[in-house]
Length: 152
Ligand SMILES: [Zn+2]
Ligand SMILES: [Zn+2]
Picture 1 (cartoon, helix red, strand yellow):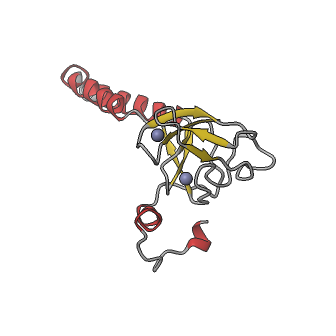
Picture 2: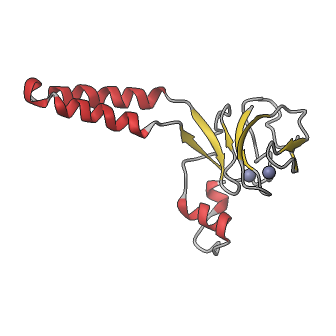
Picture 3: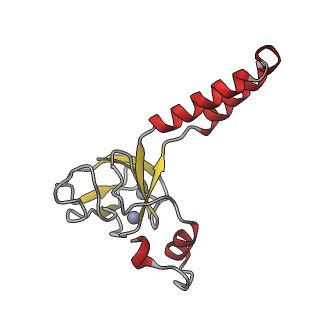
């Protein structure tokens, strides 16, 4: 499982590969060790994580590796050819854009520590990003109006 995380001690973002046997994560910058959970993995699927392996937070969300710059570029190309194609280029490239978006693999991200699980397949429980949930977990805002039993 390839991950991208950030050192809590020196703030260095780095990439690492974790296995079920990994118990400690060392920062390549300052050497600060962090315990890695071995029980947060899904029991029957090695591509699922139940909880964050780094901070044990059980709130994770899914995110697509979407390259926004490329998406905008495609639409811009479509716009350039509008005078010659009577707007058809825009339709075609919007379609390409959508197709490209659908091809992208989803990854799983931890709400609390922002660790990205690049090889993880999101479980049905791991929904789209929820800003309210993010603020509650990150900045300790009130749990009022957040139904956690519903959204997992
Ligand atoms: Zn560090
Ligand atoms: Zn986490």
